[in-house]
Length: 131
Image (cartoon, rainbow, N blue to C red; front, side, top):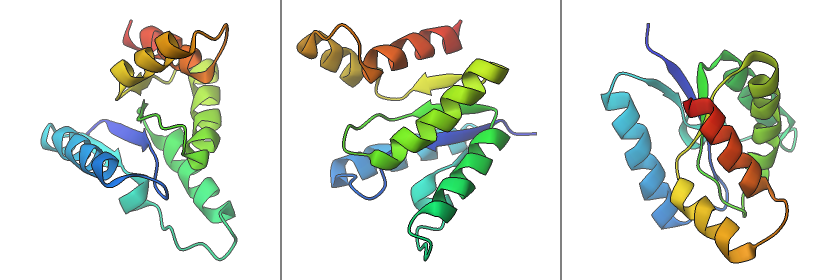
């Protein structure tokens, strides 16, 4: 059975460049035989509940995934919700969370020089997930 991957990524505010990067990333994984849940494509974005159904659908897909991949964009509010679910799965069940755009996150950390940040958490989780 194919490994299931949930991709946390921007949907509403994704730039055209990000959309292309994500589409290429998903195609690459699927060409390797992985089953990818790509929210832009696989989660119904028409939600009369104002987003509640999207959140519950993504939660279910994250729980059912073998691992989570993260393309981090500060502009994506939905990613923060999905990350909370994924982080809980990581802590409670050891579910891997792997960074797609690690170099971008490393650059943000280096530029911002903050004592703590989500980006620093993402880097540590990625390291733990790849061990």
